[in-house]
Length: 340
Image 1 (cartoon, helix red, strand yellow):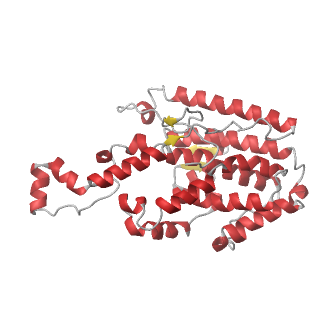
Image 2: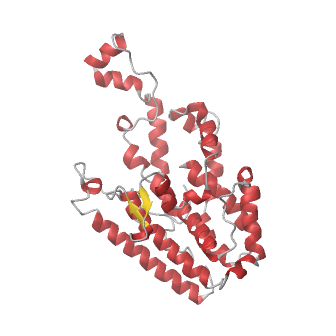
Image 3: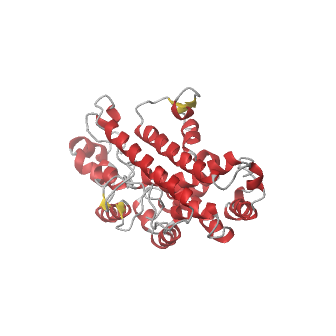
């Protein structure tokens, strides 16, 4: 979660503020998706992912957490953060021009993929319509000095250790611009929501989802193994999180899973004056309506008794990609930005 959302977005946030004028259309498009991201990341470095911080104290990676994260980043590829590409990479979808969204899901009852593709498509349509107001042909993109400087900084300074990767979009045509902006918005909104706001609903009861193991599994014939056979619950509690680790861990994920009272959700803007372009305002209003319609369809899917991964024996509907939410612990809601 932290690497693939919080960390990788920082170069985009910084480059946007450095290289794009506040009047630039791409600045207006992306900035709402950066709200509080730098603040929460700075805070996390102080108490969460720092040496001997809360993450190291409560999760199995312990002191190797940052080393593991660095290793994973070596495999990071911006193009693979787009949902369709990510599903294909993970082997749960294949390209199929005849299917909705151009993909065929190999696991049809896969709530994250089904709901996510609708959200992705809705975002991409909005970005396409918005960008078409300002870029009538590819030359307009190529000759936009601010835009090209922005993309150069993202690649060469923000993600400097990956600046020579051949997979980076060149940002020389309309399709590349749309795909790039859609991916940035997807990461900031729906992807982060899906991996963050379910932490407490799914992991708040530590015995059901321990974050650390304090012992190896006992060997057959050992005293510990006999205890596991005769008193499994007592033995299990000696293996998983200690009481202090449980207290810290539950408190942490409870805080991280909460929505703030000033949250701005996908399809919303904090101010009606985010742009003076009436055409852009009308397109955004349409986008907001489309997001609401996606929410209605998700609610209906969660009622379908034939979809066992939504309404199976445990009867846990998939709500993490429902766009709207109230404040607090809700297990739903897609904020515009990575703000917690």
